[in-house]
Length: 298
Ligand SMILES: [Zn+2]
Ligand SMILES: [Zn+2]
Ligand SMILES: [Zn+2]
Image (cartoon, rainbow, N blue to C red):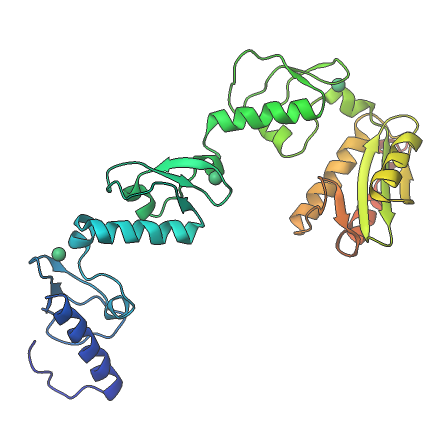
């Protein structure tokens, strides 16, 4: 390094001294003719003769000096891999490091087992395809489980992808063609059933401060009784009956989407919310609802 024309301010001089000491420890040489500050890359030649440009700040906090060496040195590559996994909340399942070019078994933060290349997570990618939503087998399995939950049967002989309609028989025996992506986001599967729902209700419990919006068809009492027994929702805040085709379903979806857009998420299932955050918004929408026939009187 050439002599610096003017003396550096004491803090910069201290940072430069620390940087030089660290380079010396690693057998590296500073090529950069002057100090550029802790945040700027400085040209350096590493012990192996590679030209590299580490930032003093990174070196001071334990970062490597030379990328070429980091990629080759198994210990550096392994510790970079482990650090990246820790960042992602993932756990390495392999007992030993298998090298940068071998897949390693890893458990992601959600508990999925996956196999990843160390070199690919280094480049900023996640570890888990399931979490990334790109694994077709998982998407199909999740769709099947959801259909089973709601008593529906998949008629489509093969999986056609998340965005494609699949033939399904609903719990009431209607043939319908929902798209998995919609079903997984909580929408109904059957437009015939959706049309049959003609009741919308809002029930609450002042002790637990829970509020639930829901829809049903015909006599609402059995459904309301269920909510009272199961969740203690004993206060009927709103009850709209005799709604026209599809209106109950649409109004419920409107409420759910508005809450989600406002950052209010269910605390239980898909429709039960913390009342202090959700009730006002719910009632504004429910009370603002007018059937088409009332909006446009003939
Ligand atoms: Zn090197
Ligand atoms: Zn995962
Ligand atoms: Zn149906």
